[in-house]
Image (cartoon, rainbow, N blue to C red; front, side):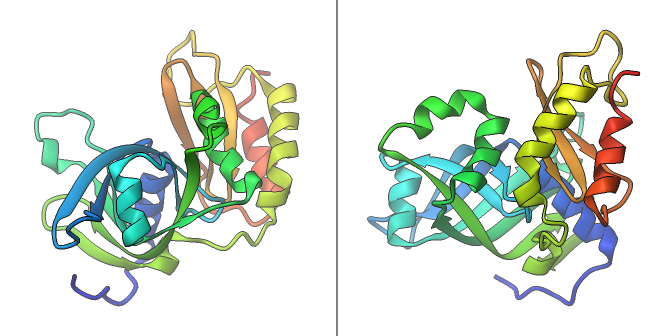
Length: 235
């Protein structure tokens, strides 16, 4: 793997973070446990930590989980192709790092709010949450627009203390502001549920899927983030 280049301009880093925050179904690449010279590909659902690291809920019985027990190295591919006439023209990013068991329930809740059906799996003894500690990322943002990014381009420290404030803030905002009106969606809009919040945006879930609402720029405090979201509530 070529080493990451010097940090790219913020526009590439922001795009990569948006792809990771918005992604749901991802492709995993691991090394086969019984033959680590051979690669193995699979699919999984993904969420993110507050900082922006991928979160995966994996079964101990799955091949990719057995692979990670032998070698935690992993690549997680996020593909934003919308099914257009040129499938390879969409933005995509591969996050490269190591999958680490994540024991903190507060972190795992970010995944389970996004995919509530997964709670029945998470309660089983053979499922566990993994966090991907990022080493680098490979971004393809169109023909010839290829960039290597550093871990610090994707994982942003939680300077606002959102991780601690998020559960109560989500409950308060959802109770006071719904129904939510998301830009770009025609009426009647789905019944959106606010399931995640970070410094750069918020995540909503409905029967139609997950929708990412990106702020115009990183929020510098909780009050600004709250004000942005309140603006999405129906008057």
